[in-house]
Length: 211
Image: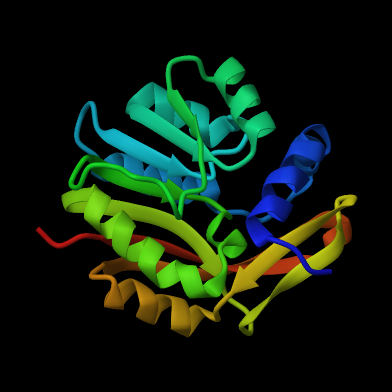
């Protein structure tokens, strides 16, 4: 299936917002909360945090909003609408994160759960460089990346809609982070059970911008 990857992602998440929320609750084996706790322990009080691909305001987003000054970004208008309802204390912006314009050195941390696997591979290196620029010295990036063999394309029926996925393997993603200027504090490949979608492997990374 041909088409603009970003339009496919935006329209897909608009269409399956309710179904995706239900599906997320059944995914088993994600270390999201463990890594989130690790990040929160490192952040200063009243930290400024940017969440890329924030979705509909799930538990991790609500925790971030309670502990930090949170700005959430998502390409899906319906996901942003739901996030604003669920997490009114945070600020939310509907935008393509690759095109996002933000002041340099304006965040203590950037969080990106399961979103870089929707970014075309050609655009990921530049995006990581921009994330690095948005962070203050000694700021943190907590993110998931693909961990399997490099691939890019559209899955015709993912939870009932076409969805664009893109990934480098774990070693390539580690190299991209280092090339963007990050120091890797923790990195771990984790397999999770995605119900009828089967098992999926992700590289979990906690990285830091040198001070």
